Length: 257
Image (cartoon, rainbow, N blue to C red; front, side):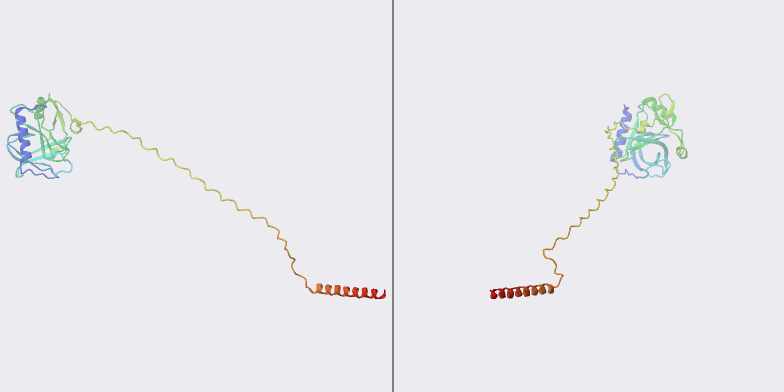
C-alpha cells in the first residue's frame, strides 16, 4: 500500500511519540493507552488535534470492541468508536497505531489500534461518508457503521463500503486470517486399538496319582517262635533214652557171644 507524503509524516510522528513518550501507560483490562501526537489525526466522527489523548476499551463485558477516546486528564470524553477485531501475525511490545492511505492535504485516518503483546487489535468502523472517501482512494472496502451512541454500538452491525459507496457484508476473514501459510503437519494414523485377548480357561487339575499296588509281605528268614520249647526238650529226652536203651541192648548181645 502506498502512502501520501502527508500520511507518511503523520505515521512517523505518531510512532515516534508512542515509542518515546514517558507518560505512555496501559491497563490490562481496558487497554488504557496514552497517545501524544504532534499533528491532526482523523478518527471516526472527529479529528484529533495535536496533543495527548487516552484510548480505552469501554468497560462492557458484552462487547469488548468499543473504543473511547478521552482528553489527557480523562475528564472529557471526545468520541466513542465501534471497532472489529483485527489480527496481526506478530505482537509488539508497545502500542501500535496503523493508518489508512488518504489524499494529500487530509489528516491521516487512523485505521487500527494494537495493544502491547496482543495479537488482536481494534479496527475502527467509519461512518458511511468517511468510509466511502477512504475506499475510493485505497480501492479497499472499509468497515462501516451507522451507530452513533454507545448503546447503539453494543448491538450495531458492521458492514463494508467499497469505492463506489456500495455496502456489503463485512468479510471478517480479511481481519482474522493469517498471512502466512499454516505449517503442514503430517497426519499420523492413530495406533490400532489393542486386540482383546480371549481369556484362557483354567487348566484342569492333574488327575490324582494312582495308588501303588500293595506288595506281598517279605518272607521272614526265621520262623517266628510261637511254640514253647518244652515239647522239643521232651522229644530230646525220649531220643536219649532210646539211644541209651539201644546201647545197653547192644552190649548184652556182645556179652552172650
